Length: 448
Image (cartoon, rainbow, N blue to C red):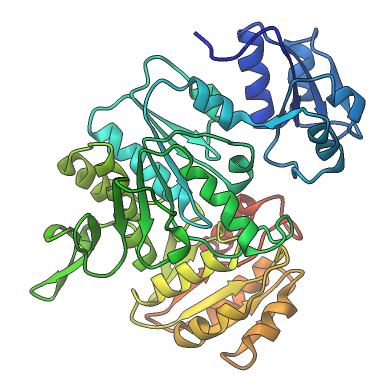
C-alpha cells in the first residue's frame, strides 16, 4: 500500500536515473504526474516516450506557471534548489521534494543511512556485504547503483543507502534506524555558499534517526543529540564505551570494539589507514542494526574494495600502482595520501589535477610534503594546486594521463607507490571519474 495521495498532481523535475525511477514509481501507483527537464534532450527521454507515451514532458527552460500546477515537485539531485523557477514555485506554495523523501515514506524495513564527503560508497557496499553475510535480505543503493525507489519491496529486511548532500536537501524526514555522516570536508563549493551550508545539508540525514554513528576524529560529523539517543562512534584511536577503533596487542594492530579486539588489521584486503576507518564505520553501523560480529568480520576479510577507490592496479619494479580516481575533492585525496602513505615503505608519486570545483587546495601541502616524493600535475586547475603546494615537493606538469604515467615511472623508486588521487573532478578532460581511472589503469598495465 503506497503512502502517496493519488488525487494530487506531481511533476518530476529532471529526467536522469533518479527521475526515471520516480516516473516508474508514480506510474505504477496511478498517480497523476508530468515531467520537466532543463535540457532539450535529457538522458532518459527516449525511454520515457517509449514506455510512458501518455506522460506530458516539457524540455528546456523551466516554466514557472507549469510547475505551479503541481502540489509537489520531485526535484533531481542534479538541479540546485536555488534555481529561480523552483524558488518561484516554492514561494507560491508548491512543495519541493525528492526521491529519497518518497522512498522514506514507503520503506517498510529499517534503513541504514550513510553520507559523508568521502568513503560513503565503500562503507555502504561493505555494510551491504556484512548484512548479506548475516543472511539478511538486504537492498543497497541510493546515490550508489540502484535508485532508492527501485529498491522498494516487501521482501527486503534491511535497506543500506548511500545519500548525497543534494539528495538530502529535498529530504525532510528520513527516519533511518541508524544514520551517519562519515566525514565533512569542502566539496561542491560551486553549489553551496560555503562549508556551513554544505554541513547543514549533510546533517539532514539525522532527521528522525533512531540511532547515530559519528567519527571521533571529525567534530563536524557529530549531530546535536537529544537525551537518550543511542550513539556509537568510530575512529583510529583506542576505543572506549560504545566505540570502534584500533588496539595494539603484542606489536600487532587490531580492529576493536570497546575493550575487545576483533581481528588483526593485516587481514583486511583494503589498504591504508582511511580504509581501516571505513571498516570501523561499517562495523559500527552493522552493530547498531544487530548484525553479528562473526558475519561482519567474515565480510571484511573478503572485501577487496571498490573500483577507482584506492584500488591496486599492479606492481612493477618494486613500485605499486593505485587507482583512486574517485577522489574528486581535497578530502578524498588527503585520505588516500595519508592512509596509503603510512602503509608503504617508500614515498608516493602523486598524480593530481582536473576541475577543482572552486576548492581550496592549501590543505594538501603538509600531507604531500610528508608522504610524497613528487607530484605530477595535469588538467584545468593544476596551477592552483601548484600554487598551494609551493616548494613542498618537486612538481611536474604534463598534458595527458599517458604522459603522467610515464613521468611517474621515471620518478618512482622501489618501495614507492604511484597514486592517481586527483583531488578534482574529471570533466575538463574525461567523461567521468570512471573513464579517468580506467585509462590510468590501462596505461599503467601497458608499461613494459
